[in-house]
Image 1 (spheres, rainbow, N blue to C red):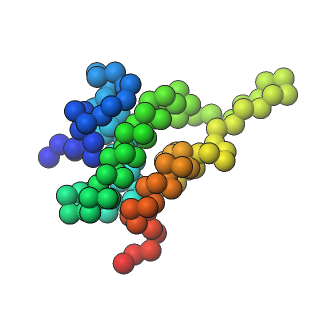
Image 2 (spheres, rainbow, N blue to C red):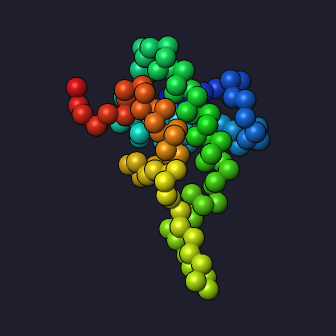
Image 3 (cartoon, rainbow, N blue to C red):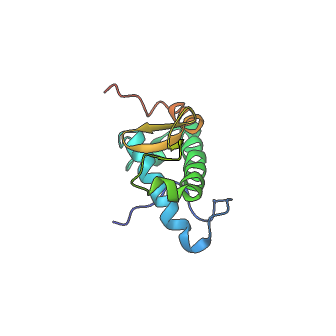
Length: 121
């Protein structure tokens, strides 16, 4: 069965070119699966409307952010320094959760679904 992203191309309202859109939405959806410990996989339509809307919103924004920052995200470098000037990826507004980089504000929105909790119920 082919993996279906949480947001369809017809619902997306951003600036990712059409030829790259499906790949970006799938990547963002897979990252959401990681951040939510796969609690959504196969259960998307059994979630509340609030949870589904949040997931779709985060999927769109995460796809945009990952597309805009793909050079940094795909780089093997964590930081570099030239002539005393240091540049480092990460910081206050970006978090790394289970190996997924996500803007802190976006992660906080996803956490509102209750699906990011590490506690097993």
